[in-house]
Amino acid sequence: MPVNTDKSTISKLKKELSIAHRDLKKASTLFSSIGEAVIVTDEYGRIERVNSLTEKILGYSSNEMIGQRFFNIVKAVNEDGTLIPEIDRPITKAFLKGSAVFERLYYLTKYNSMVPVDTNVSPIIFNNKPSGAIEVFRDLTDEYIKEKIQSEFISLASHQLRTPLSSINTYSQMLSQGYAGKLTSKQLSFVSVIEKATSRMNDLIHTLLNVTRIEAGNITVNVKSIDIDNLCDEIVGSLEYLALERGISIKYTNDSITSVESDPVLLREVLSNFLTNAIKYTPRGGRVTLRVEANDRVVFSVKDNGYGIPEQSKNYVFSKFYRANNAVKNDVTGTGIGLYLAKEIAERLEGDIWFKSEINKGSTFYFSLPLIGSAEKQGKFTLEIPN
Amino acid sequence: MDSLYKEVVDATADYLGPSADRFVSRQIVGHLGKSPEKLKNRDLNILIKWIKPAIALLTDDTEAVDNYISSLKSLSKKKRK
Image (tube, rainbow over all chains, first blue to last red; front, side):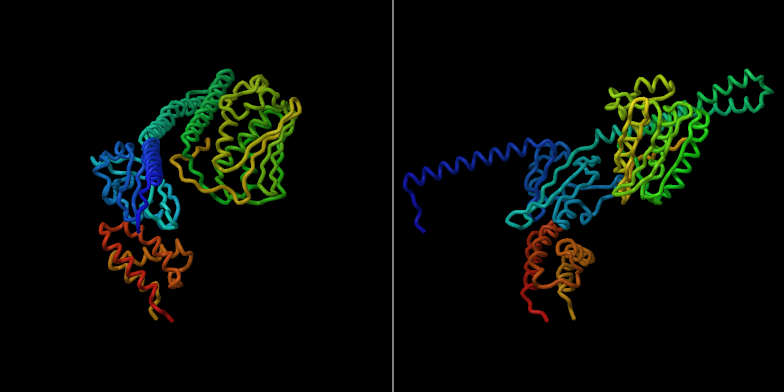
């Protein structure tokens, strides 16, 4: 075929070549600027391209990687160091699925150290055909260290704070039961103060540790079929002493739904929190109602005719350590963590949490779950229930 | 009667050995959304499209990959009852 060599054609071709070079350079710069490690493979599973972050994480230079079989360079292992078979690797699964696969695993560097990574890999489709894969991954070492520190703190705090409290509790009970001799009524009242303070301290440690676990973002959700009446009766029963002490009546109603799939420990924590607040912030003679309804969602609500929440405090009700002025006035013992914890749990259970309130008329706190319930989630921690 | 699926597995076994059955059935279920025994000639082009990069990942030998794909393509041309 004759080639057209007139000046205008050559000029046009030169211009197009210049644009193509510029676009290629720009694409190359964009690739190098990506803030995560990137590996591109061709249709034969060979490494075609890597960026500098990949070199940094894996320890190989780009020259050592390019042209090599992906699995010969990027070796993946489980937490115990055992090699993950190639057929179970995310990139193999991506070709099986035909779309992106996201996984956390460990990569072995050139020097055989293990690096925890968060990886996502997708097939590259060109002309309607898979022509390779692109993997983007991130070094999670810093996050793993942070999680390890949090986990160690939780274990340490749990043990170191609770052990002395346990001693105080045990010996104060022994004192009040007369193991060291009969106490006078004044001495007994002093011991009673110690016991109540110890119990409050225990609840506070329990709540703080649960907040730390929740904030570590790794709470297990153990889904079970929950008998709603049994759970709610149990919670109401456990708070009857508090209600009686304060002259509050508690009522439970449910004429809609018998069971829901969710985590009973987490659900109990939310409802206990709502009920405890309702009792504490309602004056003597007041009423608290726990109601369960179901239409397109399962809705738990706790209504009181108490002090209500001031308008200026409403935006902060679910914030950590926040307590409205009238709450502080009416209950000096509150921590401002309960509703924050309830909100975090609600998110973990894929539920919603909200409230309505009017000053001096009362509040209603709501927690709803989807009718199909919560999804099971594996985490590093489970929430504790207090003794 | 020899099914097309069995023929594809036999062709794959030369490269993946005992893993061939699991590999091929996963590809068929994943990309064609049907049970492996229901594989037809007309499905092979789509299957080959996805099998090629998947098997290429698992072997070091690009010539072997090309030979394997050719053998699958020849199966698609075979007349069946």
